[in-house]
Image (cartoon, rainbow, N blue to C red):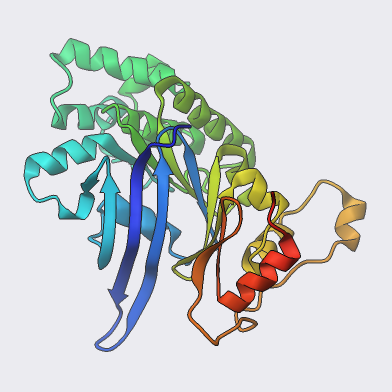
Length: 312
């Protein structure tokens, strides 16, 4: 992983009007960077805003406020069709539901080649077919699958088709929005291992969105934890698991079952109470340990420093 920033998120907000006077702050002032070649994991429970964050970054939604800087350019400031076309080739998305994201009326070959057609990446039909066959083999399928329809595949196979479609335009950055949550547990590891293999081979950068913290730790270099539209903690994956600081992160980690029945019977679960916070000032993102940031007030910051040390 390099220290060169590929994506910079600055004060990103995504608010939705739900009535004349009602607003849902799905994403409310996010700040984080994603470096070239890394996998940045974004976790949190359903409704915390993590998927909305991914969709806003790739501009499926226009941001309410803030900036998304990709390769030094403001994504939401792009205007021309050519600029957007270039951006859409560089950044791709793998969706949560592998069936709903595939057109049931299209054959697999046309689904995978759709981006290639838009960007004129194949010289002729023969080259187009050869590229599709290559992509199918890359994701663990075979060329005979090209003439089939999505309903003829299992969930894991459909997700592999979705991955092949994302790879077809040779992107540098892929947003994986809960790509394994709709799959059987036995298939999840296969898909994650495939993503890791592709990253090593092609130098890809990932934003991996999920609520399964154990899987996120396995694939991620750094992890950001979201709660109600805000990022409450950010650290290296191992650091976050060994030294969770924010009470919400602690509650998420305490909910992960471990394969030890005796330990599980006596284990205490940690329940997060959002009302048990210092309200004397607005919390800020502060570095409690080296590279380990937590959303907290100054009073909480001093408490966390005492309890968790400097990490040096």
